[in-house]
Image (cartoon, rainbow, N blue to C red):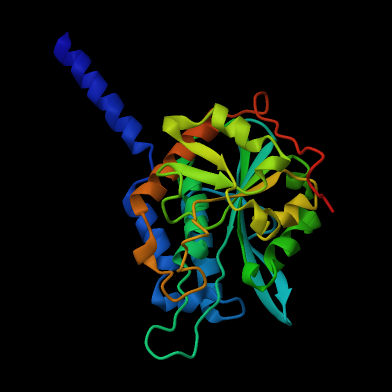
Length: 307
């Protein structure tokens, strides 16, 4: 009997581990997006289009459905050219949605000699890798919430992609049922609060962080924004949804007092703590598994500027 019990426990452990996203997958996705071949993923370049198609491929591998039309690619105009956001959905047990986003564009290359590629590993290949990782975590699960995954383009040019897709009327059936949007912005490094921890911009404007922390899995912790004076809440793609009165905050780990790699050629895979990022992704997935429309309904307070 002891041997049978041990075998059962071992099989259970293997199944449990198999549900997690491996660090190898996280490393591959982020390293591909931040590779020299992507040349900094600047909007309007072939490399930016290549990044969009790569993300669409990952969405397909994670069994996501199209948000609209017959493609994961959602077009918008950029200086007379067609640029793309990437959007996919996973149907849950209810028609209430949670959203997960990040931006995949960066600032391209410079005219410097030597290393002249702004790879954007942290900014924001790490955010895209996080939302892809969450989609992977739920690949074979059916959560209570339905989920929408959006990879924004043109953030570096004034949040053009998020503004375009936030106002896409074809997506209103999703937006009208969107409980909250988690925007991942620069999550490649260990935060000043340590491992397995993020901070949330605009934490004073809603109770989203409090509700998350009540359900935080394996010690995952969301801290208040330590850089509130920099107004980060209004400086990332989440603001395009704030204007629609949707709960939308950015989650980050970057230490803004020490981030010398920000908009620098040194923002490559060497800055990434892949083990910490993988831990955050899996524990965020475990946290999300605890959420349902019955226990998770965050709200803004009267401090936030919604227009």
